[in-house]
Amino acid sequence: MRVAGEITCRELVELVTDYLEGALPADQRTRFEEHLATCAWCATYLDQMRQTRRALGALAEDSVPIEARDALLHAFRGWNAA
Amino acid sequence: MELVERHHAALVRLAQSFVSSRAVAEEVAQETWLGVLNGIDRFEGRSSLKTWIFRILVNRAKTRGEREARSVPFSSLAPEADGEPTVDPDRFVRAGAWSSPPRPWEGEPVERLLAGEARDVIDAAIEMLPPVQRQVITLRDLEGLEAAEVADVLEITDGNQRVLLHRARARVRQALEDYLS
Image (cartoon, rainbow over the protein chains, first blue to last red):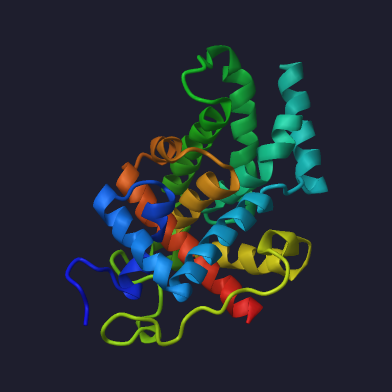
């Protein structure tokens, strides 16, 4: 049986970002953490959202493709000359 | 040039969510850099330099996108599907507990896998996102802007920013789960 105020797994997954962003009201945050403490599945889900965020952060170190770099340098030279 | 190297790819990625082609997005990014050069004297430091650059880009990309509105591919005009669950409802029993829970990802942490295919998996997942979700996740997670800065640059509310970010991250997580299992 479900205790009043308890959150389900289905509800928890929709609160993960609010949780990570520190945007959950205190009472909801407590219930979120209580659920996590006893639910390995949701803990895994949260961990994967964290890993996803870290992977996205590491993705940004893209280099500029050669053609784009040439076009940019050309545009900048034009600007210098102006 | 260092600033350019650090942000050019993100500018192009972001511009692409407003305009119809990669080529136009490259142009918008170039125009943005020129705009930055021309306007740097007027930069007052009230926001971070990065936020300021992205705001210039978004303004230009929006104008460009509006001008070519008729040629924007239909898919990017699809609604953002607010309110739909971000995890397949079939993965839960009726009472709301997992019936098909996520399995822990074994081996290396995902960010270490980026030299290989995982990068393509994430890139493809981002490409598939509705435009505004793509804009939010690019600024917030790839470029590391603060939530308030993202909301400011895209002219959306903080709450909306969070909803869009959540939907976008959940989709990328799902793509990684599909790839890793």
